[in-house]
Image (tube, rainbow, N blue to C red; front, top):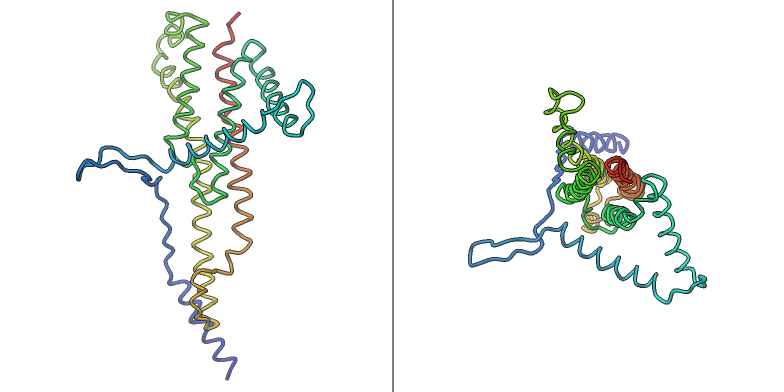
Amino acid sequence: METAQAASALSAAAAGFFDTELHVDVLGPRKMITVMNGSEELFSISETVVTGWLLIILLFILIKWLTSDLKVVPTSKKQVLAEWFVTFFNNLVKENMGAKMMHLAPYIATIFTFALTGSLISIFGFRSMTVDINCTGTWAALTFILITFYKIRSNGFGGYLKGFTEPVAVITPINILSEIATPVAMALRMFGNISSGMIISSIVYAFLTVLSNVVYNALALNFSALNYFHVFQVGIPAVLSIYFDFFSGVIQSYVFIMLTMAYVGDAAGKED
């Protein structure tokens, strides 16, 4: 009799599971600050901008701490860490762009640090900056400006325009589209990879919530606290976070600066 009742309960739970709809809302960044003029909205500041300024403040404090009380010969671990960071990016730029482009090492280090922390901040419950196309698009636009600047500097403005007609004038439209596609591809690559991870994680979270509720219903557990604790969300999301938040964030940030160095270095290739 008890076996039959248990089987009936499981059947009902299973039926409820397959009838349950997964509601997953993947929205853009929220408006965190809105300035109104009566009933008219003058402007708003998005969640991405607020998170970005928070990161700038935190990174500024961290860098000030790492670079305080510097010695000619390092005597503290924080100075060793700071010098390793600077040396790493100096060597990276020198190897990929040449010694003549060493002045861009601070820019490359800044983009990597901002992109990495902007992705990893989701671990602490904030919305990742890199799931906002406005953010990755801005970084890509900065890189595109550098590419254009060094092409004009190396070839002159006339030579820059002439480059669109090579090797034959008939493919000029294709060359123009190729030039425009560079920053678009850079922006979408990082945005797409990080966003896909966020969407997959959201779907898995919703699925595990439903699965937990099905089990609670099958076991006739009706404690109000269970509305806030879903047993199947323990452990599995952490594994996903390691890949989608940490691993993917590191890889995409590194890929972004490598593409930046490749494109800008190629544009400045004819520089003396």
